[in-house]
Length: 285
Image (cartoon, rainbow, N blue to C red; front, top):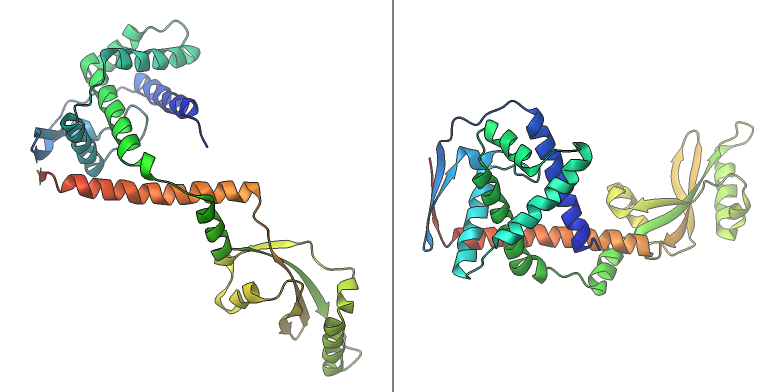
């Protein structure tokens, strides 16, 4: 799994990228109208147009995300979650350290001045970092800590979505003898398994169950080692050798683990959002 340190590095790297782009841009945010008002037991919040600009981590924001983040902040207030100025300073120091690699000699004050030219004051940057820190902490505690994927979950998914290992052999029909006789010969060689000695079998192919056509789904139910005609056309016969289901290896186990975790995390975040929306009244403008 990705470590906490590596996750922070990725966030800092993304933040450095967006700051670099911002320092090169000439845009100013001059219009800042209200997009929505949130009425919550902990207070009232306004979602402004500036809340919908790209976040400092480089990700895009829409109204739904902006509302979600403000609701998380309200819940954090309910639980007395506080972010210290030292924590924000630490995040800024990380940003400065990474940005210096691209722009040697740049100071934190230089960065603040560039943002101020675009209409984004230092206080707003610090406030966004504070919000980001709160959102990350709350999601970690309320969502991510509850999203678990066990080895049994992985094994069950692998059983339900097997990777099928097969080989194929194409045998063209000869014009020198009757097609019916050739078919009989092929069927006899399949039954005796002499056909496995043919030199022109394909390399082992790996088929995902999801990629099989509807009329080929029966392959997953074949007995390992079985041989049968896959297709019969005027040009010849394609023979299938079903080797079996690929054993679950470490690489696929990790892939399935990440996939299941991502799917469950998305669902948990959506459920958390729905739960928070029930605590407030949102008026879009």
